[in-house]
Length: 392
Image (tube, rainbow, N blue to C red):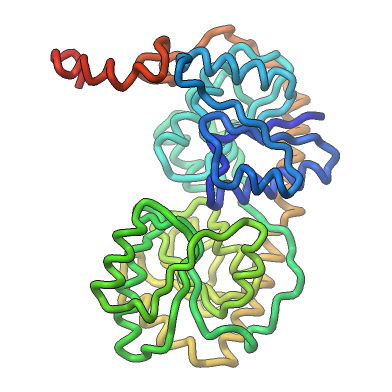
């Protein structure tokens, strides 16, 4: 059976690694998955193809309208009995034209209004909404009036890895892996944390893997605090090198202010990297047990974060034990087998359910302003209307 995994773009991040894991799990289960990019070609698009994944791009043409683009996507998806949607508003606009036998499952990966809004927009045309944690499920119920019966919580999980190198033989360094973003990832706390640490131990360093909108601001902060010899930006990391690189480090710095599936945290722990993180209810605290498989500080408290590091990193016997506990936690609680069993059950139950009554209606509201004019004209039209006072 064909399965479409539809996404905005294959950018660099946790969502993309979840898509990779889901694709490979479905393929092993006998399905024929295809990943669709429907807004732009992401930085990992070619990488996924080189790894043997089927990736199809259905990207907007600047001379077409949003409506025309939505119907182009429809023609590609009609042949897929199962669709998993990852924050794709164009697809939600055309669900009413899909065959009644098609089963549609939006996935909410993050605490972004767009993800929650898009997933819950066209409820009569979907089977279930999948959330990567209970916090997102609660928001859908309370703020978007989604029936609890329509929501399934499926934690992001991982493939088992080969036995990582012994903790004692690794670099005595920290690693950060993710977007250079502060709203969710808390990246700007890292210089503050290491400024405190450097007063007591200037030999503890951190390598930063990733890119994002705050890269220049982050570099400036590192320079301002004179931490260039302690904090090193290493650039982007391809998905097939994540496990190899993580297994070279002893400690993970994870200052996220909100996490969805906390995939990087899990990837680090399964590789025996000891995590230092903020205590996020229903997010990190369901993975880390403080002092047993990692350490947590109160959100935003850089002093407590630094204190956790300074109080524990030098105890080699304790850190070795915590590293082993971290590996065991992920293998026991967040295995790929458990995640895929849930996905396959959702597919099975969905195919047994009654066919939805398709609306045969284009939902133009989700396409936002000017859905019928060529995309390249939207910006000048908006500007012209603002000049004459007809648009805010």
